[in-house]
Image (cartoon, rainbow, N blue to C red; front, side, top):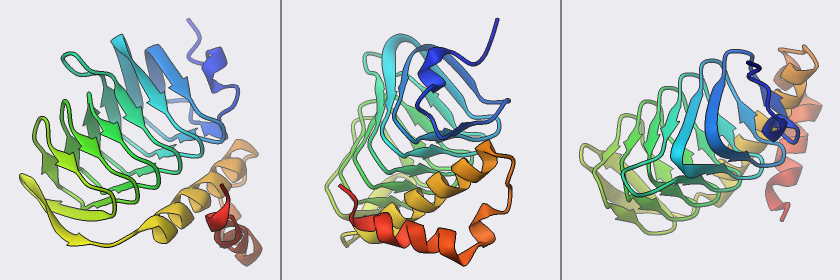
Length: 183
């Protein structure tokens, strides 16, 4: 059985060790990095445009809910997303856990090691930390989060071509800055 279904056609990069099962939609320019796992046996998982699912991320559907990742999101290393909704332009920090029924607004940062318990709703433009996670600051993080997602998009294009040092080129990083205002 091949691990390269048609859903990868629009992706910028999918590492050979990434595993995807069930009803999964991957948006244009998105990337799945080493050992990412996405499982959607009952409900669906939707990954938006130019979002990156980094190394060792686990995305699964919840008990009664699918999982939605918005556009231009960075789901960083070792995160678990379980039956939740992540808005656009969000950065989910290393080793965070977002549980069933959570809804994260647009332009948010979820700090590393944060745990959001079931049903937590986070407003747009929030910075969240802790276990359980709480809003610690309000700030529109659109620009830094979009920049991070665009840098990962450029990196994914490099990896797809076998260039593992694409981001060391200042011109490539400049492209990431230019695309912050991209619709």
